[in-house]
Length: 266
Image (cartoon, rainbow, N blue to C red; front, side, top):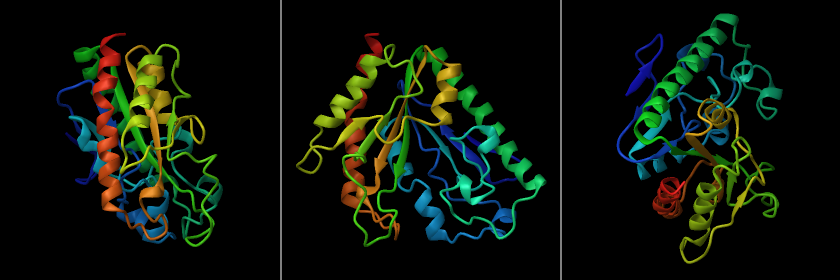
């Protein structure tokens, strides 16, 4: 299903099929409305660096997915409504985003998209709850670890796991079996001859998107906020390693049977 607001361009694409696992890639979008493109200061590479490239390549691991099409620089669906539109550099990692600040009408149009997304999300999750009772959402993100430049040393790996599983917005005890099953399976996966560094709540604990879902579906929805360090790509050029991207897809896919079993035994 594609949802559009005020234009033929889709805001959101969702698909509901079989199974109790949903894949969401809410920061994979790169599109901007034309009126925002005209006043955008950032070039394509800088925007892409703060978006979550390749997360949309991993939604195919389940039959249910949530895939917004717009860039987080148009509206950030993982922030509260009052902070969903970046206005100043302080809102966005110190970046000078705009040639001129979006006017009130532009901001309102972006917030209309925000409201439409969460309305559609609620309808989608209502269907999942009705059919399965309990379900799991893989909230996929990527994060930078070479912010000082392409030739600078990477950030401290002790503080930057390859995969950070954020569970700070849920009732961790209630969903313990699901979370532990996911982390255990992912940690044991043979990733190109080695094991991935998978840790919980080291770098991120989860944003507004999982918090909203856990508030509205506390006993039905378990959102795993999965932040994958950009070890599989050059975060400055945007070039990805196809072998590692495919291996990450396989690693994530390998967790689904264990997660579904944990759900069934709750």
